[in-house]
Image 1 (tube, helix red, strand yellow):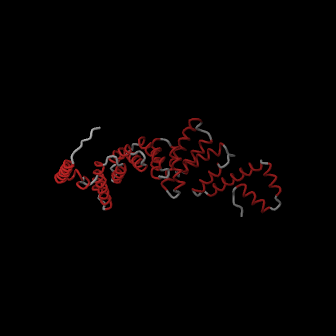
Image 2 (cartoon, helix red, strand yellow):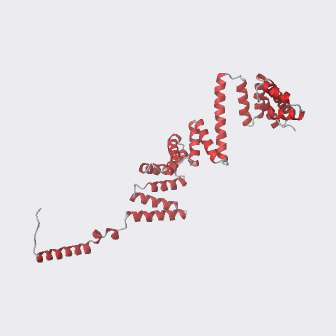
Image 3 (cartoon, helix red, strand yellow):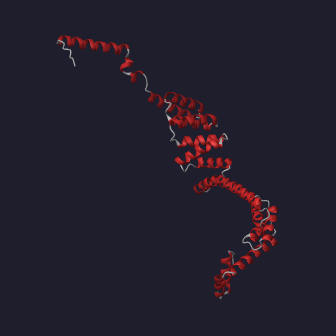
Length: 311
């Protein structure tokens, strides 16, 4: 390596020349030496726009807030939370098409955003794009298993897609967490009814005139409050299998509902006698019954065994 040796006077002249050059640059081009002072940093600008967006939202100015988030994304297109917030604004305005567009872009930037996945799935569901919504909602639930809204929309999607068993599973999970949610219980009842109708169709294909088909038909009609139809089907089932446990009780219950008291009493008695007859065929039951000497205790024991109240 070669070194340049200068006389002391020459070095002083070089130093003065360098200082003069820097002073000239500082005067003519100050931003080259202090860029942060000449122009706010991107981070500071993004922070200001974010605060402006929040202020606009607080004042109910959704249009202004959307404009601020759009400006943020022009400056910082890799900022996943901005996509999430902008997508939420579109979602609240029911502008689901734009919500889907923005949220999809955001999840490409940062796939680990459960809120964005849930909002995207719900937006797709609102647009009737159930097959596309399903994986998004499932991903949201994987990341946040207690997101009731996402799970409810997923259950609804599964109903639309014909996966009733899957829908019932998710609705049951929500019902355990939110037992006061009437909508969940309603949807769960609808799903079970559809499953019952599917099962009945398959049973009809096997044997349309079996006592099982008539009994299930009676249950479905009773749930729809078609009591005349339920009575017809239950009677058919009872005629074909009069000893079947529960069939006379179901028939009596419908008679009771339509205020046919005598017919209801007769069916309830038939159910009790039928149940007692089955019990008496059990040797252990007979032995315990005969071992009871007091008549009141015997009636109490029979009541417990037959699941009826004894005064």
